Length: 389
Image (cartoon, helix red, strand yellow):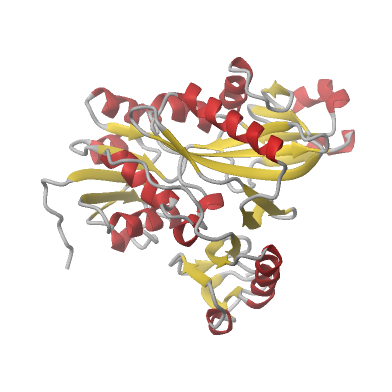
């Protein structure tokens, strides 16, 4: 049976039905809102939690436009959506979070880097390349990172070029070549902006990446950084969202170098992996906060209840097939540990299948439990596919 919410409620659509949409819908249950989701997979993680599900292509103009007609607002859980359809919907009175102008800047890494430069937001030096052969003229610029302008996601579309021998790994389409930063820390901060331009910022978090997969492996909140560095981070994030001129929620990822200089790496115009701990760790989660923005309620409290850590549950190497969670019961016995399974039926190497949040007053306890979880809880395939099949 499909439950239909009363039509007097605000009608809010989500483009994309993955884990971010799923967690947004879990938070939506606390509010008087009718929820709509569009995704091309009727069995996606968010499909069964919304009031109305539409099977469609979020990159297709007609699908997005027809989905959005009659809604009060739309948000996204991935940048790769049809922004032309969102522009038309905005002109017809549908609120878009973030607005299409901000989305266009952020979804294209060339435009994103130019935005930082034009608004004097510190970011690493860069050159724009249109094809792979362009890289030959920038050998003096190495080591650098080559990023596809469009379509990169979760570490895909990124190549590290350390020497001339690596140039053959560059992309043969429009891309950004960024000077590599001598990184001491990778930091993320999430900031919400309402229709009035008021903002609420969450405590900064330390991000630790799996260098092989270029995916967030675990993180610690709050970040352990000097107060003056934190001030820089907060000032830069505030300036960034001010110039985007859009309501919504934004995740700003930054580098701190060996000299404590701060550089923006990238910005995400949506709820983000680096804010998942806020579900249990903060008074208002990032998901709750976005609903407050979209429904016109006061911004929530971003203060931490307790320090937190997150461990991402990634599909194990060499495992593709129906997902099996090994060590789940053992981890569920731990105190102040919260498991989130995303409801994806199939696993594959490196795929995000869930996350675990740990709360503790002690940093060392957070790190200890994070490592214990990483070594105990594995996402494997019930019947792994053999090589070559």
